[in-house]
Structures are given as C-alpha cells and as structure tokens.
Image 1 (cartoon, one colour):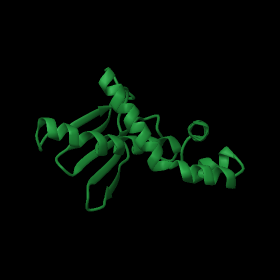
Image 2 (cartoon, one colour):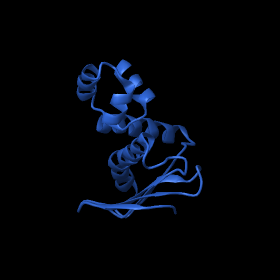
Image 3 (cartoon, rainbow, N blue to C red):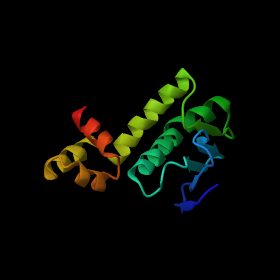
Image 4 (cartoon, rainbow, N blue to C red):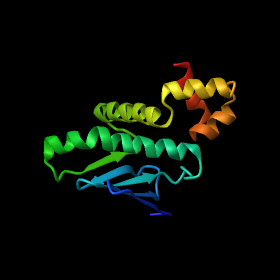
Length: 141
C-alpha cells in the first residue's frame, strides 16, 4: 500500500491509502467500526477527485454495511470494487455517489456558493474540493 493517512475519531478507524492497481477494491469493511478507504494510484489525495472517492466510500459504509450485517450477521465484512461488475453493484455505486454529493455539496449550499462565486467553477472547486465538471452537473440537475 502507498502512503497512508489515519483518521481516528472514536467512531471508526479509517486508513486512507493507495493500492497498486486501478482495479483494486475501494473499500474494505471489517468488524463493526473499522474500514479502509483505498484510493486508486491515479487518485492523488491532494486533488478534488480524491475527496469524492473518499465520500463515496463513506457512503457505501453508511448505506450498505448495515444491510450486509443484517443479512449475513454482525461480523460480516464488505468489500467494494472501484468499478462495479454487476447490476446490484452499479445500483449501490449510484447510491454511494448520491450520498457523496450530498455530503460534499448539499444542494442549498451549492446554490448559495454558486451565486456568491458568480458560477466561477475554479472558485467553486476550491470551496467544495470536487471536480469542476461534477459541481456544474450538480448545479444544473
């Protein structure tokens, strides 16, 4: 694993690191409180895209880990691939993306900041730490 950043907040231990391949898993949940968010080598942690990837992984953790535990028991883990391979994985991916957008750029705040920045995507990218094309798509939806 590449460089790691550990975040310990009392709720969960999160380790953010880079995997050797873009085909590696993006999230590994083990136990009730522990999970790994694994960025692709192409996701520089200093770039806005990395924030989106981490927020998506958190979305999977919040939305899908409880369902897996409910179905398979309290000790069940969860592994999420960077690229979904089944229709169910694609649906879960869409749900995690929606969660990430809501986490990083709630619509009411996005509209307020859009007006304040006069639609300047460079300024909005700095505010939300998300790729400009996603900010614009969110605003127009």
